[in-house]
Length: 170
Image (cartoon, rainbow, N blue to C red; front, side, top):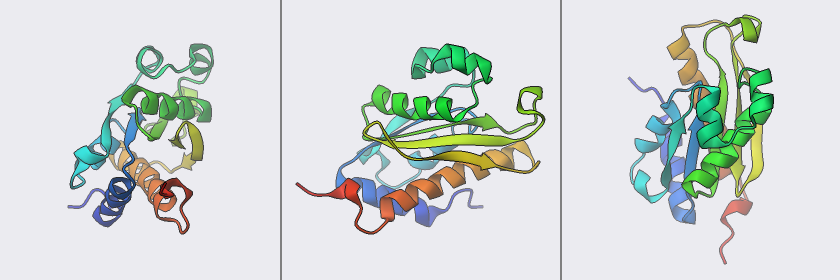
């Protein structure tokens, strides 16, 4: 059973290795699925710096330096929180690229009984892609995989677009 698009993962790994760039992950709603995906790519140690799953505000603040007043006001789920997670995961692991993702895989009062996630992908602390991933009610684990695959697809598009500015040789 294929959880992730193996072809996309191989492309991501190849591009990062060719460019000698690294990536790190700060995740919440995906509960380590992105970390699992990156670690399954051949030669992952050449580009994958590591990741952290921070599930509550205390851990997001302590490890990913998420601004606590805003985070508390939105139950740690917003575009701003995802962006801070991406930037600070990148800093924590000293990587070129960072990914942050936070959201809801089950309906909660704070989410108005909806399920959705926010993600951000940064390169050298500059946002390259960000957004909200809407969804319908499906099994939480299936939804978490959907979120992870959506973010991986966004990263693949960034890395594989023509005339990629990230890979200019010096």
